[in-house]
Image 1 (cartoon, each protein chain N blue to C red):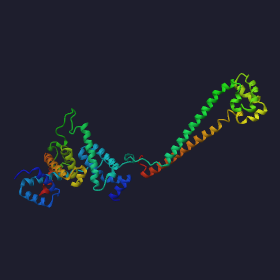
Image 2: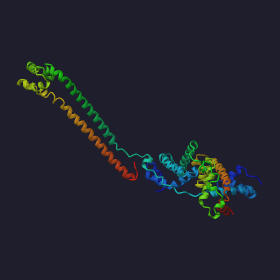
Image 3: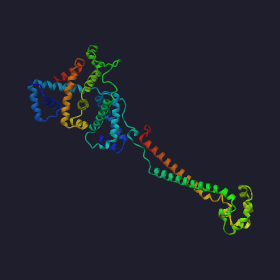
Image 4: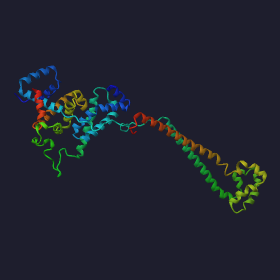
Length: 222
Length: 202
């Protein structure tokens, strides 16, 4: 009787699980019968395995199911949403550019005004300097004697000769009002477009989110 | 729906299908983690992490035993956790007194006379097994937990721990030998467990 080597123990352990070849099985069974130490080692291994197999199973403390958030699933974004958002951003850029241009125009106009009020060639600067308007210069000059620019603005059209007035309407009559108007229309268009596009994007996004929530169940938080 | 169809659907991103698999396998995953880590909270965290990782990597599953594939993930999660604990130990393996001294005889090593032989319950057996498992090197522990406690065959264990069959056989034999020696110390405490085995051997 000899103490089984580790190689024997390994074979016995494999034999216990039924993973030896037929030939190895036969040889080992013969040794188990003839050598009590080998039989004892097999009994030890079997006992260890049997006790381990009786390890109590624990219940899980909670379910380990995944929420979409845990799984890293994000709600799908309809293709239209980024397109609309991009278009809205572009509309906003155009709005800002238009607004800036408009403000710059007004600023330059505002800066020019005091100079104009002091200068005798006011009407020429408004684009009426050519042709018959030239004949108006002395009349305008007379009005410039008034102490304030406001007074000039109020009185200038009245002082203008009737013939000249007829020639001026597109530019001079509404020099302050008519010029910015086309720009103002575009401001409204860009702003309105931007708001509508972003509202459409939000609505589509909301609808797709609701559809996603219905699909994955109300209990999950995306 | 059979397992193959559930796995295929999960691979296409169907979370409900994957969660059906989670419910089917969460017991074995949690119990494996519990036996390797020896701590319920850590085992729960490792189990949750296992299923999150498994869902993200499910397309790497190419057939074979899904159980073994899943248990490979949990084994890796447990190894990571054990490495983390080793780097930053937070709780002692043995209970401590209020003074911070280790208790030499924890509950499962208490005087057997305190408990009548026939009243030794499953908890004592569980504690004894857990104590002996924790005395094993991690690699041996994982193999014996998978083979003898969870009942995986050699091929599945080889997949789960990414080692060749020969290594599995060798580690299992060594682990069983060492556990036998350790459990022998509990023979008087756990006579029912040993007696049942001796009767079975007859």
